[in-house]
Image (tube, rainbow, N blue to C red; front, side):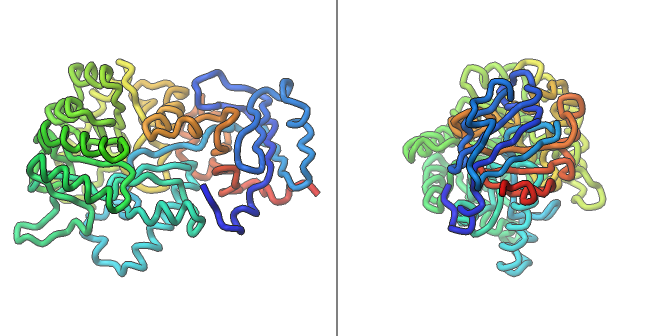
Length: 429
């Protein structure tokens, strides 16, 4: 990641000591740990202070920072693999069109910073976010999580991604691509890739927020999904995420070769078996069930579907956790609130996942889904220094991570992005 001069000046060698390290690999915590980051933002050591190389202990670089973690927990930067950053919480896609474009841009930049401050250093936006935001973060124009974006979602006419009114008025505001044949699906893939998409998203089922269908309704056909996957393969092997809630559409998506099942509310043993065989990920977005239901702000059709599916979702995702499904963390932020992304970990734990496994789901496994596990997702030597320092012990109280006030320091690529500890006061003379 390349930053302008002002951002380069913020990246200096960093030594964190007196930390309790939970490194994202699933290994037992390390008390009295030391982590050293070099001037390029790469972790050169992470482990017990007693085994640290002399160069780590001394950290003789006069420009370096030394941080006493005070026994706090140090973790990898987290991922949110399913967000919609260009929309405010609870806003219908069409509402964005009511705002001046400058305001949309500024509001989106604010949500990106809010998400980073919550401890999320990497996101995957699954419709609505232009690729320019990715470039803006990469070049230091704005501060936020690094971004992978699908730009838009591919849906069939009348499907989950079709938010046209009966009179034909299009409320999608650039969020949707409609495709009703396998050939049209290929063209839709080409269009989103032309606009800079890092991955492709399809609607394999209906959904909660769409007025014309139900979560059990099938979306793109298996043949159409297979065409999308093949076209994405032809363009650098880009992954394909499938909005898939009812089980019939989940099976279509898996047979079509998608990389991830988004939501997966109706997933059954047949689908879990197939996902396991294909190495597919499940991104449950439990925040939409636990924190995404509000009768006062939702259309009645949306509220009724949410209530009806809430228990089904919890039962099936709990079973998926029990079965050992390959689960990555995603919140569907915008449907649920922005800036409290790590509450999703509490919901995973509520359905049977251990706190350690939930942390791994939000770090290492999510990095695997995004194809960046060679440089992100764990606090290990050779990885980029994406670090989160939090109050308390999330292994005994996972909910600690869901409150951004407990996230006292966020480091991204070796640059301190959030600092509630006064690190500038601890800079070496």
